[in-house]
Image: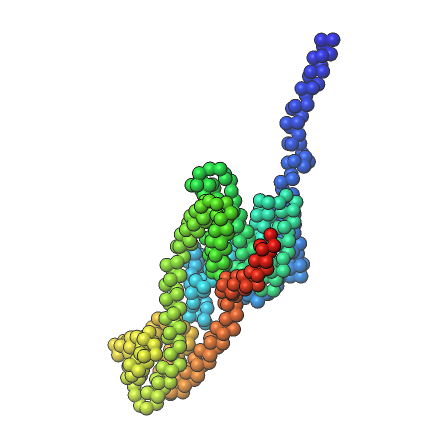
Length: 432
């Protein structure tokens, strides 16, 4: 009887170790269930990318732009420039500050993939990575309020949304596609509460501030409009969360996170500021350059020397463009003192950094070398620069609807919603 009782006790106590070990048994769903949701998201991203892989690579609207940027970034890396700003091959070799207007974080990812993959697979890999990141980020945000299965479904819905697929397939706008995962992560870290009963500083600095700062920096370094919209969204969400919780913690977390994020992206701002000054100077020069060429043509055909013609135009064009007058005055001095006039014209093209000025410098050098009339070369260059200025104006006019999208969303649509929904809300409030 004693041995039987001991056996029963041993049999009963044997249940405990089995219950402890059971989660570690191979094939146990408790162990692998946490990986099921991300695996479904990755599979969905692979399905969304499969048509591109099966039917070959594709060329969206912005594909050529990205390919050239990838090559330029790799060239900058070869010269020891880790974070590029200037694109040397643009504008027929004159260059432009492309990576100021288009922050290069997503383009740097494409260049890095180009070091490991064939160029044919780089856009496919980018589409897969961005769609997978979109699904995973939206799943992580949805898990704050929904079960795991429903959150995974929400991630798949975001991945297969019309905007994501249209941006990936038709436009190939990888910088805009990055907003699919930056915005959900921004909302996640801005709204997450880990210790709601702690004091103010502990609630604000609960481990979400540093990730929030990284997300803010990622938004600004991926796409300028994305950074603007993300900053406005962060401010609005933090204000709404602070009013709902009746606490300053969400506002404090958002303020510290935004400040740190902008500071992380701040190393990009000095070069961006200088690039902006360069672009403004080039714009001022090119707006008055065709008229300056007409004046230069009149002076040359009237019998004036090249030095006198440049000096006369520099004195007359100052009211239209002080920058162009400064460049012409410097060119006049170089024509007078340099032994080779070709060097003076080449210096003018290098200082301005514009293809129109480079074309004029080349034409003047050829006319000087071969003895051809300068008047005909200046007349042709003036006409071409005037056409170039008109094309630039048409380009700016065509891009105006896209630039008005953000102000419309931020300022006009909220007012429209207030006007439309305001009376209905007031009636509902009276009925209640």
